[in-house]
Image (cartoon, rainbow, N blue to C red; front, side):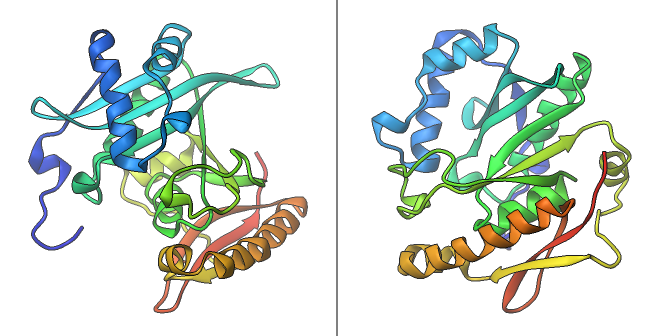
Length: 253
């Protein structure tokens, strides 16, 4: 967390479900602040209402009365197993890196456990290294699937015009891995079977040199697909001065 900022705990951030259609509209406003989407790529408030009424989740994070983040999830089914697909979790820029996103994720977890749901999934951009660290290390998710250009090219400046390749995070919310993390034990393989490495300045490369970013994206796509086909999963992440490294090892359910 940057020096001088105040954490979510110190801010006393509260998480709750929206109350009424007006508060669902806050989720639309927050999307624009977080991703700067055009209208065509912005999820309308009606879809938040559908998610809420069909067994999904809609949660808002508040700093007192100010909405500063949200989460949206839909119900999914894998081989007769019900899970939640967390489609969006966003925090406005001035509240990022303060723990608000983690509070939203664990609020999702608490609500899912109360309903007997043990799995939450979501997609994330493998080029966004801070997200990778957050998902694999701070939350304890694992990754076994790679989805090339999952959403198509979008209007968000954050996507830099690149194909929207995505990794699928599997968060087994009552697993020993996640319980250990809650006890302060960070998940990290002792000797990873493989590493997939990217420049630590990946965000700057995406913004300043999209052609080079797309070359890196193509390289790691092939590496992930090969490792996943061989039965490995991404189970950790670490940084050094020059690179970020996905850590992979053989994985079974």
